[in-house]
Image (cartoon, rainbow, N blue to C red; front, side, top):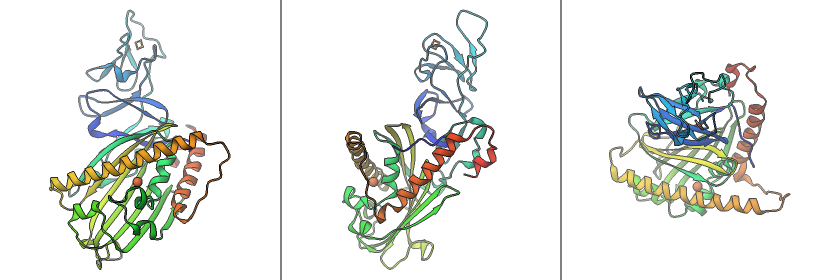
Length: 357
Ligand code: FES
Ligand SMILES: [Fe+2]
C-alpha cells in the first residue's frame, strides 16, 4: 500500500461539479463538502457537523451558509458555526475545518494538511484544459484500489498494447524503449517513448483522419502526487513531431489525469483528453470521449481486479521489476519521500519551503 502524502494540493472536483448543490468527496480519508457561494467562489469544508457528525453534504444551503440537515447548526464559508438551535450562545468549539481551495485549469484543488503551509503558487498547471484553441472531453471514475496502483498504471504505458489493444495500443508501444528523467527536488518524473514508424491506433486514426502509419511520441510528465500529463504527438511517418522536428505538422493531444486518493482502498481517477485540432468538430469530440472512457474503464476493471488479488495474497511476495518499470519505481520513491516529509512537517515549517516542492 502506498502511504498518503499530506501537505499537498489535490483535485477534489471539476469546477463545473461545484455549484449550488452540496457535493461530498473524500480526499485522503477526509470527508469534504464542496459548494459555490452566490458570488461564485468555491468553498470546501469538513463534511461532518460538529454536533452529531451528520454529513453536511446531505444538508442544505441557505445563501452561502450550510444548515445541517439534522438539527440545524449553521456554518459560514469559513466553517464557523453562526447559529445553533434553542439557544443564543454558540459554543466556542462549534466550527468545522475549512480547506484552502484553488480553482485553476478547470479543476478545484484542495489542500490536505496544515492550512498554514498551503501556497496557491505550488498548484501544478494543466493550462490546455481551459485555454483558447483547445477542446477537452473529460470524466471521472472511482477505482476500488490504492492510488499507488493507478500511478503504476499510468507511468508504464506498455500496458496499452495488451490492455488497450484495438483502442490506443499497438505492438510498437510495448516494443519501444523508454527514457526516464527524474527531478527529485521538484517531485517530477518524465518518461518518454518515441516511435518512428508505428501502426496508427483507432483512437488517433478516427480523431485525426491519418490513414497510414505514424510517427508517435508519448512524453509523460508526472507531478507527484496528483497531476499526470501525457503530451502525445502523432504525425504521418516521415514528419517528426515534437521539439526536435516539425511540431507544427503534428497532431497534439494532451492527456491529463488527476490521481486523488480517496481512502486507502479507493482512488478518484479524473481524466481529460484535450486537442488543438478539429476543435469545433463534435464528431471528433464524441469519438475521443467514447474511446477514452472505454480505455479508462479497461484500467478501472484491471485495477479493481489487481487490488483484490493483492488483498488476498499472503504476505512477503517479492515483486519483479524490469526496464519498463523505471518511471513507476521513480514515482514510488518520490511518493514515499513526500509521504514521510508530509507527515513530519508542522506549521513551524515556512510555507515557502512547501512551495518549492
Ligand atoms: S448533527 Fe448537525 S445539528 Fe445535529
Ligand atoms: Fe491504461
